[in-house]
Length: 137
Image 1 (tube, rainbow, N blue to C red):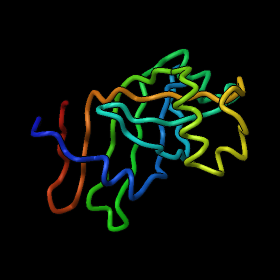
Image 2: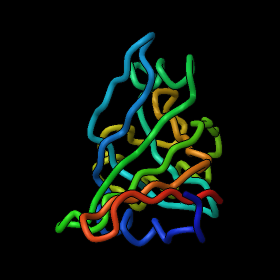
Image 3: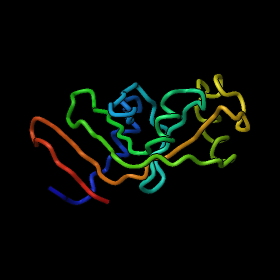
C-alpha cells in the first residue's frame, strides 16, 4: 500500500535511538543506533571504520532503521541504501551537536569517523490503531 509520505522526521527527532539492521553474509544483524538528522530524504548516522557495521554496509549497502514513539504509536522504519560521505563541514556539525560522539572521535579529520546517510526508498509505519502502512518518496 502506498500513500502520501509520512513525516518520519518528527518521530526520529523525538526518539533518536532505535534499531539499525544490516546484511551480514546470508544473515541480518541488528544493533542500537542513534539517528542524527535528516536532510531531504537522506537520514544521517555515523559509525567507526573498525566496526563490523561499517564493513557490512560497504559490502551490502541495503539497511533499515526503526524507532518508535513511547506508546508505540507509531513504530517507524526507513529502508534504503547507505552512502558514506567525506564532508568535513558535515562531520564538524555532527561533532559540535553531539558531545558524546565528539568524545569518541574527537576531530572531523579522524580517519575512524565515518558519516553516512540512508537514501530513503521506503518508510513503513505500524500502530495497533492503523496497522501496517508503507510510503514511497
